Amino acid sequence: MLTLVLLTAVMFQDPVRRALAAPVMQSWMTVFVAVVLQALPFLVLGVLLSAAIAVFVPPSFFARALPKRPALAVPVAGAAGAVLPGCECASVPVAGALVRRGVAPAAALAFLLSAPAINPIVLTATAVAFPGNPEMVLARFVASLLVACAMGWLWQRLGRADWLRPPARSSYEGQGRGVAFWGSVRHDVMHAGGFLVVGAMAAATLKSVVPGEWLRAAAGNPVLSVLALAVLAVLLSICSEADAFVAASLTQFSLTARLTFLVVGPMIDLKLFAMQAGTFGRAFALRFAPATFALAVLVSAVTGAVLL
Image (tube, rainbow, N blue to C red; front, side, top):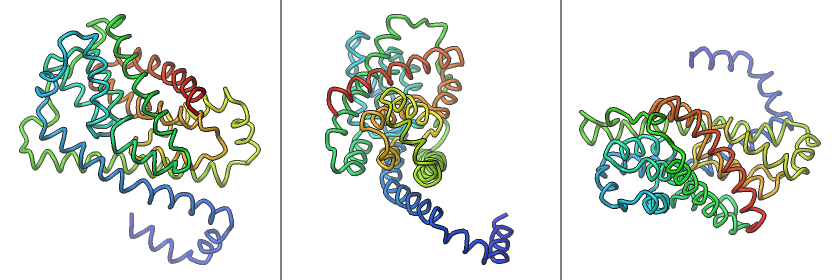
């Protein structure tokens, strides 16, 4: 297939060259390459650290470190996401391992939501993507941690045991640590890298192809802009280590709307819904995902109004 694509490109190089020389394509490629190159180092570093934690840190460590009372374990587990790097692809199996080791589901779910949203790699990437708006880092941290803890407490209050189907086994059982580490790296790079490319393509298309009046109409309405970027975050399913650069490129939208994009994306998107359904069961995902989306939109809008 690659050979056929290359031969086709050579045979039709003149039309391809003329198409790429168009101002719209020049603008599209500029935005696409900029987003990918800015985000790629953070994505790779996050994948390496995530794989190391998933393979070399035993799940029993988290069970011993958390308080026994679920109400106290929820904020502790949520805050633990700030010091444990990892993308959302890794947080789901880690949360499953915590539940399997006896950690309260409410605490495991708080960690699942907070780890990909407020870890050091993600916050550093956010600071780099928004150099003129350092308050965006604080707003993302506060809003994401509030949502993670609130969802943990909500599950403790209203969740039922028959909605949650804990995973039967670890993702790395029966494998050597080296094999498991590189297997995790390959998996996360393929998934996160692919979603990064798709997200960069979508951002470039929004910037270069979509009529400006459409974006201005959506961005000019405070409520519509927040909802539009919340839905976009779900559909694009961008890795949390790279989403800040995509959000930074959406300059037509307010900081509050872009904050919603950054809070919603790491907590609920299409790939996360599929992973949560596969790990904890469809009954869990069908209840947990909509509640997370609604709460993330509400908290990010309020946090943006206060801090931004």
